Image 1 (cartoon, helix red, strand yellow):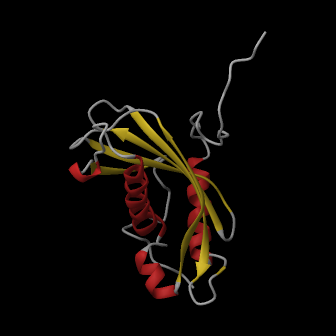
Image 2: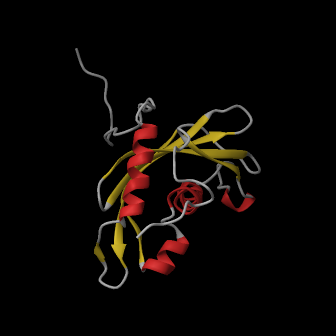
Length: 174
């Protein structure tokens, strides 16, 4: 089965893919005066919806048509700089890896005013059949898009947060 380009995107893909025009909502601010940790997840997720819909074709329309969709298996977020109410930001995505059922992305949240890297989020997701609730391969056309995107993103330098272990880091005692 072939699938037409989504908004003209069948590759080559920008490296990275930037999702612009995001804004910190006033309701996302916590008692510390900056965006609350939970809303970083929402902001990354909303930007990923655009990536999946407009670039890969495995977003909402795919879910409705195919009865399949991506379930997140693992995520890790690094909080690097504050975002405050009303500030604009973009999210830049790069595909790190994929196989027939899974995708591994890294997103970078960048403040519009100065380009500052505010957060990174690494995500591994799996394609799931909604009827069986089991993992299933992406259609061939989606696997070709993932292969194209991985090739287009292969030359990007990974930030130090990619693949970083979680835990307390302690200075070595001499």
